[in-house]
Length: 150
Image 1 (cartoon, rainbow, N blue to C red):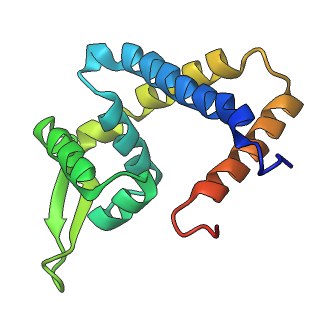
Image 2 (cartoon, rainbow, N blue to C red):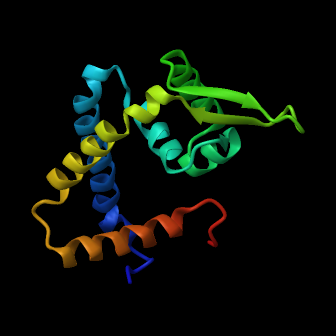
């Protein structure tokens, strides 16, 4: 466990996580440019491919982004013909997001892009190293989640 009295020593970990995120985004974006899909659109498409017909609130919560960021991405996805929005019959305040057939046709490409980037990023690590990294990063994420104890 890291000593709480000297956290500055470990600031490099946060920087590395940030750099890796940027590199991953760049790798994914470069593979999607020819499709006109941004990284943000990719992110939300992946969430909807896991479970289609989700409420805007659920997508926002799972993405960890703001409601306005989600709304902007949904607008872009709708403009590209990749999603449709439908109001709940019982509660018109609730908006459900559904993938269009065009979006479903992109699944193999999105899966391929995801796999290529993961293989590139993790190719030099053993199974044990990958498992250890996932466990460690999950612990970091849990510690930083909204509502976490101080």
